[in-house]
Length: 84
Image (cartoon, rainbow, N blue to C red; front, top):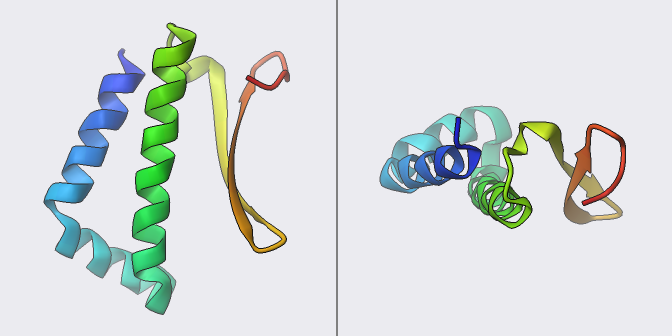
């Protein structure tokens, strides 16, 4: 499985169906739906880049999207618990 291609496809689908995705996100996040729409775009782009940069499948990585002191961070851990 090519995780970079999968993320790229998910990103394309999200952008293609922006209105529907935002409606679904609004049901979960309310007024923050637009913010979350953008956060998911960034998440897919980061995953895509990590997959391409490491030149191996990203299934060996755990990507975490979290808020810390008002900032949104995306971090990646390898299964051996080292940062990438």
